Image (cartoon, rainbow, N blue to C red; front, side, top):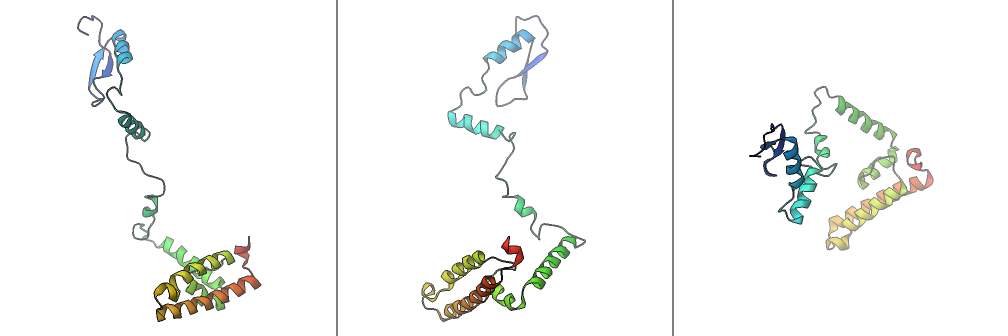
Length: 172
């Protein structure tokens, strides 16, 4: 302040646009300046809302959880020079294939399912495939008719096995 004789030891921002440019005041005058200063003065309610939302993430960009995290774990992005992770995936796939009853391997592959599975999962998948490949939905296409026959046989095989003897992992 021009008439103040005290030392300017306390800083206060000059404007909200440039918070790193300061006025230097004595304690009495910095208190008065801060009491009169309104960061949101002249802003519309929409601008104030935008500022508050930006402040919740410290003025850094943010996005919903899971959207970018999934990309980081894709095979093309993940580096595994010792092939440790790939070996684990291979062993899990091999173990699942070994545990699958031999008579259900082809029907499960036709339905796009893996063992163990539940009757509800099989029914849901069957309904999806039946709607997609039904000849009426495909204009009487002969290939669709053959595909629906294969799907029906696969569904019957898996369903009869699950009704007779549900897998232990899926029963819980």
